[in-house]
Amino acid sequence: MTACSGPYSALDPAGPAALDVARLWWAMASFAVVTLLVVVSLWLYAVKRRPGELDAARARRIQNRWIIGGGLILPISSMALLLVFGIPIGYRMLPLPVAGQQVLQIEVTGHQWWWQVRYPEADIELRNELHIPAGQPVDLQLTSNDVIHAFWVPRLGGKLDMLPGRTNVLRLQADQPGTYHGQCAEFCGTGHAHMKFTVHAHAPDDFAAWLEGADRDE
Image 1 (cartoon, rainbow, N blue to C red):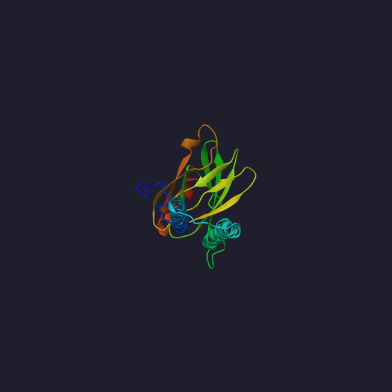
Image 2 (cartoon, rainbow, N blue to C red; image 1 turned 90 degrees about the vertical axis):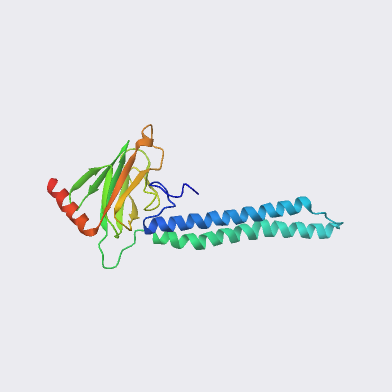
């Protein structure tokens, strides 16, 4: 539990997508703990109980009851519960249109072993860093120049693979201005451990000023 915070902790969310991921993690962890307690309790009961005399028919009925309940009903209901909880979360993380708002598009290309970041509308190109407006959704167009990489900012959202010849879209949003750390989450070669980047979230006015200043520098 002492590792639940920090720059690379998915359990210290700083955006809506990351908050959904953290909630799903806590739900699954809680369900796993309850399942473990139930299984251990049944095991202790089975070890300590003193079964009486049973005829073959009654023994078969008890056996079938456990097979149907533990082998069918329990796993099916468990998976259904997790799907009911997880599918809406996955849907909210999709890059869906936002009413009355044009979502900022940023192109990110993974290389061995660095990140190429482009703002196509402003003709800005960066290396190993992103700048985004806080409180607003941003769509990242993710692809790879060589091997499979995975883009991940634990405090802002889930991770998404970057595949050569294909573009995947990841939506991120930072609740507050600040600096957030990301890394490649897919082993991509000898330099994988050093393939990190930073995301700088600015207040909207500050982001507009940065965008204008960076554009002039180009």
